[in-house]
Image (cartoon, rainbow, N blue to C red):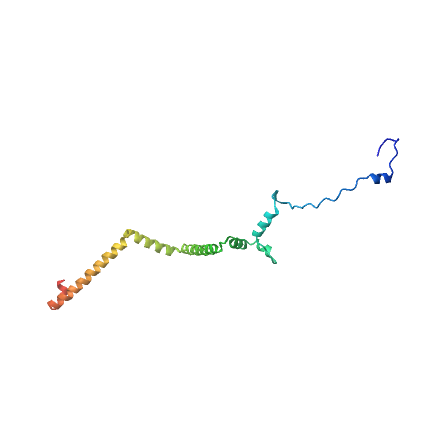
Length: 170
């Protein structure tokens, strides 16, 4: 269309005849999904691979179970293959708690019990024990016992030989 008045204005038929045919439809383009994790583009394949590793929760209240710390630890132990170690750790932790409870009971003594224990400690300290002394004392006790048995045997032999007055001579 021209702005010049001297030219005839085109008719609707001439416009239709000279019109450019419409563009052919574009071939369908492959649509790509764009996923973003923390503002970083992630391919769908990577998200699918990650999804295979995630835990699938089904059932009523399954999502609420995630708020339970114990359930979370059990799920992680199953996934990591450390369930047996966790059970062993729990058993040892329970044993430690029992020992702590017994130790706490031991510290609850009356003044009379504390005085008796202090008296025994003082008696042992007065003797002045030496480390390993008990083994040496046991050896000495066995030697003394063997000497006593030998003395009794000799006294019996003297009594038979001397006519009954064995104890006076020994």
